[in-house]
Length: 77
Image (cartoon, helix red, strand yellow):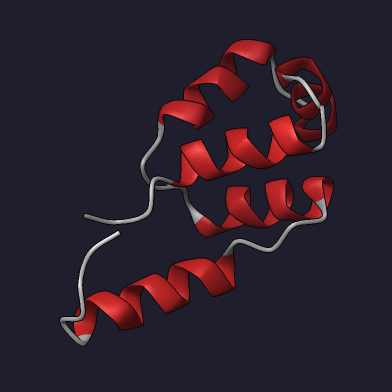
């Protein structure tokens, strides 16, 4: 099982007390698109980079760590 990136993004937004409208404004999309992002298990790197920039939170290291962890057969997230 891989990291569910949408849940991580939602959790970070909750931690920062930001709503979907805030992220939609910064990504230049509508609020429904943000709700769709929350449902995604994965995300393309360009979109993830934009989200990371706006939230000032880097997700790439977590994804890399998770892949290394799973490849070594040490367990699942």
